[in-house]
Amino acid sequence: MQPEEQRPHIVMTWTDIDRLINYLIPKFDREFNAMVMVTRGGIVPGGMLAEAMDITHVLTAAVDFPSQFEAEQSKLMAWPDFIQFPADEQLRGRAVLIVDDVWGSGRTITAVKNRVAAAGGSPETCVLHFNPYRNLFGKNRPDYYADVTEAFVLYPWEIDRGADKMLANG
Image (cartoon, rainbow, N blue to C red; front, side, top):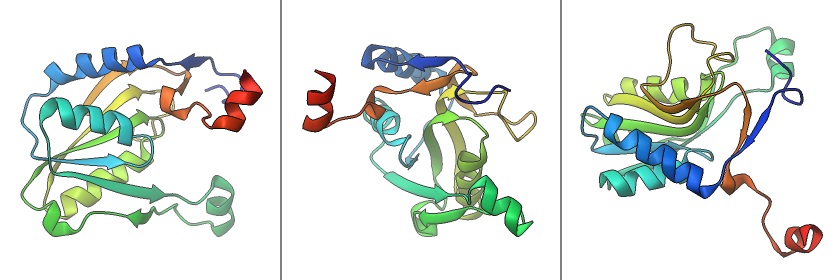
């Protein structure tokens, strides 16, 4: 695996995102009655999928892991810190689609999936891009993904915004 600065970069457009969403929609082989969007990357694709699939029970999860340096210093496994997570009763007995933008290492979305399952939900995962080269979970992969890449992906919602950015770029 190449360091991030040496990996190829892909800059996605809104048209590219529409294409990926349209590719994903017919792939779902069951109906979902809830969605958990992983912040921040999963909010935009999750919103687009929720609208297209008519999922109205839409929730968010915010997860943080200690930096690699902190994990090495503590000599402990890096356990996730759930900054925000739906209550168990919001997930129990529901078919839950968990959405993020990319599965890199897989740590974040796997932590969310495990916590949804522990709450009594029936989770499946969905991302726009899957990076099998960074995956820490062996043969485990997203249940649904639109594309495979080892490139660093820049999504249109990650582009710098604001008047100061526009003046600097214009």
